[in-house]
Image 1 (cartoon, rainbow, N blue to C red):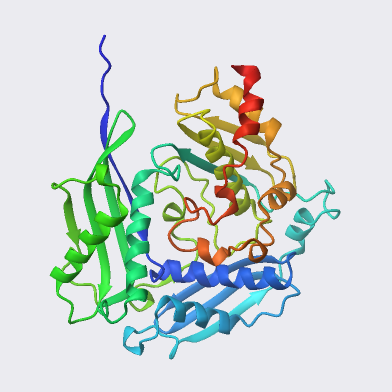
Image 2: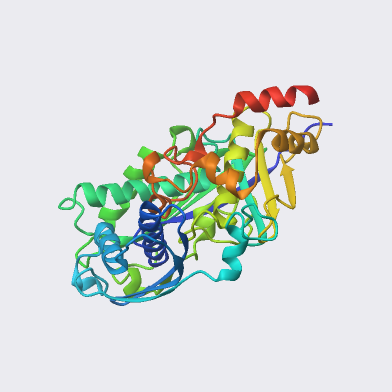
Length: 398
């Protein structure tokens, strides 16, 4: 019997650093960075809201660091490019409201070593977290989300690097990439959508030509063809944008932040949370594990799920799904390998990935808050330094 070829199109989107929700994520993570820089034991759950010339910072923060919340927020929006008062949201006119209190002692006793029922540091909350990797791109990321991010990254770079040439570009933007798959492998790009905030004098032909140049630069030639359908600012214009056009909140772009809808998501957002919150740290660890498994050649595609109970250190469960691409007899064998190689207790995750000391390791949480938390080698969870250990541990099951 001949093999039946499976054919489908998958689409993912990205949003720029000037998108209202991403503005909030960046402010919350910049505050986290400042807290950890002054006190690595800081407990941070920072939520931000932005709207027309207003920033509201709220949440639960316990830290010994001296942090000027207002200055951090205004620097973030200035660096993004919200410096023109005509945009309705600018560093010049923004008011900043701060409503912060300390972390609940009921939570603190569960995540501070030596104070909870189980003595060692437990998970900061219950829930399930996922990590994913696939060998369809060199970054071991799904192609649609990876290239959606790359389009936004390049448009942002051009807007900032050549402000006179691209003076018509403003900070808010979205991209969307649809890719045709055959037998689970990406074949070619079918559709590109870009909506980019712009000045009134921009001609749509300018933006269309720019987007096509960017696409040809950031997407591999083998995925491109002359039949790609482009939708550039399909409503006709996008002059009112950013927080003036749409209120933003921290944590509303969880699919943009992860794998673009490929695989599963536990539901917890990342930004504004210190790494004692397993919503963030365990999701990073699961990506680290999945990426190393694929890099080691033990699967072409891999999804890891872990689950925790608040205050309890050991994960309640570990589940592995290789989508029938695993090289071991079954995925249960890979689970055993993971348990042998990786320690998934919260304190060990923090130590393995050095999540309390980003600045010492030349990265920041602020950097994660635009264009995805995965797929860029600047982050420690993107290392593939466990491949040899994984191969050795897997030998007994081969």
